[in-house]
Image 1 (cartoon, rainbow, N blue to C red):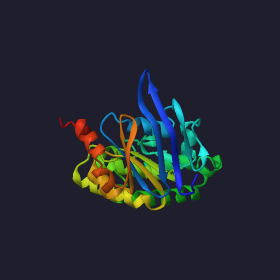
Image 2: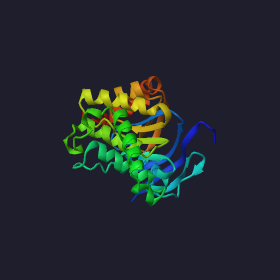
Image 3: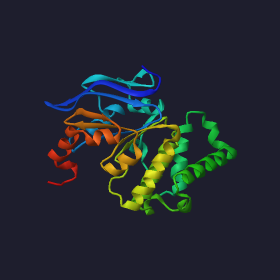
Image 4: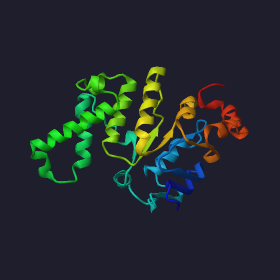
Length: 256
């Protein structure tokens, strides 16, 4: 497999009791890119994400991550290999502070080292500095001591991204990161995604097409579980089959 492809699937298929949700999807995600999976409601985007992160076993097909066949791996193993989905760990604790939430995520990653590590005051200080750095990276420094539960919706998503980044993912999967947000939050999270994409690959499912247009290098359009089109936004948005799929299905936004 070419060195610049971090994740690829071939013939990825998922059938549920006679219904084919994902049907023979061949996906190639370029290392370092921001790649979007879009499509009308019911296109199979979330099922596809669940297959990639091993929350669902595929009926058929293979998944290759970093040159390794991960089709049979468990979700925890996928995360350990560096592919992390944001809500996977967004057990954000609402009653704990922003800083503590990030510190817990860091502890979770480092726990493998040794148990004694936690008894040392110095190592906890190191952890604290790292946690503050991540909080700053997602723009939450003014809210360090607030509990996660007190944050606005958009800032909660930023905290979720910080706790995900604590796991040092090489590839980050974001499932509708902008869902339910107002314009101000959307702009903030978009800027954050652009920033964290600097040294990692991002695959995202997103309904907001203006975000996709400004953020993503490559777009795969799914419809009825199959790849309808692929390319940059200018290419796919002009594709008559894509226009038809969105308009013909009500666009997935409740417009009828």
